Image (cartoon, rainbow, N blue to C red; front, side, top):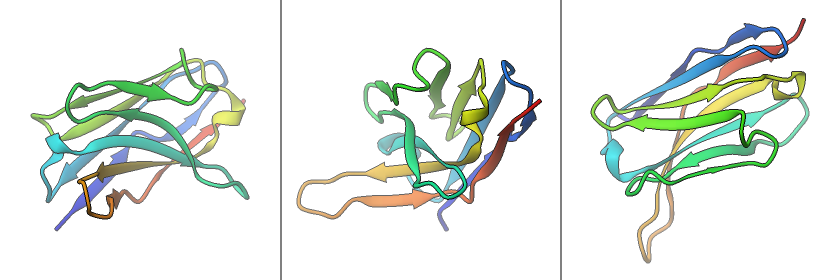
Length: 121
């Protein structure tokens, strides 16, 4: 059974830090690209950061670049999102995503249940 379980969310003051974790099971973690998405109230879900399966290359949305760092530990089957200098506009439910692309096949996507991050004084 595939599972992605996020943890580490919470309430933090502006300028503070949080580290999200996403523990995976039930699939071959190392061959999946891993991403963090977020969804704020009444807004569409948006991609925050991605780390590749092969080279562990990373990509970030512009608004978090330089503040957030995505990393992965294939031995622990876990992906992390270190969030520094948090702003109120970072408030959202953060979701972990695993994606596998294979030629000629539809994308294989797995999602976690989400963890709430609230940035407020």
